[in-house]
Image (tube, rainbow, N blue to C red; front, side, top):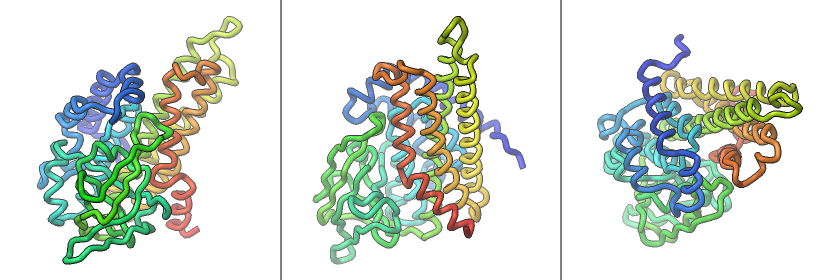
Length: 364
């Protein structure tokens, strides 16, 4: 087995890194996070769409690139490294669920626009009072004449105000598409720990919706791909925080020597490297399994989200300690990475939830 990225995947990685470094410099990141209402601009989204990223996981039949989860993970790690405030992840989540619909008429209608970036979507999973799991939603459709309506409240919905449609999870694993502006739909901004990713509360009151026809296996794979992409983002966040810490440890001097020369600093930096590389390995394996070995993808994706989520948080927290007092200041950029890592740790199931899945799947 070849454990390295292909030449094409490396090209995607290099292009993504250069593109994001040029457009999301620290000062722009701070401006978007603190001043821009939606957290991004239409011009920035257009540039991302021109690269074809919205269509990464959309099949060629629907106008996408038809690439795999490994390619998605490669891009998502670079987005985490840049900490780019963009609705890309929420849009990809919607695309994955639409693609899971196969020949579904609703999926076929929405996917071409998603592939070109003309339509943006997001995913609403977490019930206000029933938890995040798509199989445990309390939302039950009503309505007559074959036209379902939805009533309920979803929380922590990323980029909902900027989306053209929302894929809403319901009871028994059922999923529905709701258009922005539909009757009975109300979207309210909520305070989030991570200022680089906007979260919203979505209330539905007899809101008309269209049901997606999702086979259980296809639905499961879509969520596994989404959580693996989120794990990859945490890897990128950890990588950037580790580099910030090691660079500071080389420059900051105490008693005439760089602080990195002292074991109290060098050992935590080595641990950061260990955890970042471990998180990257398990995440790439999960992506490969989703593309080539679906029988192992459930376990691999749960392991990736569990380990990478915690690694992202531990590495950024350790980086803050290496920076000392300056790391705690609002003027330093490190706190943005710390907050993204903490938010990612809990999104789409925290590490404890995914470790329980690992135990169940392993028969422990």
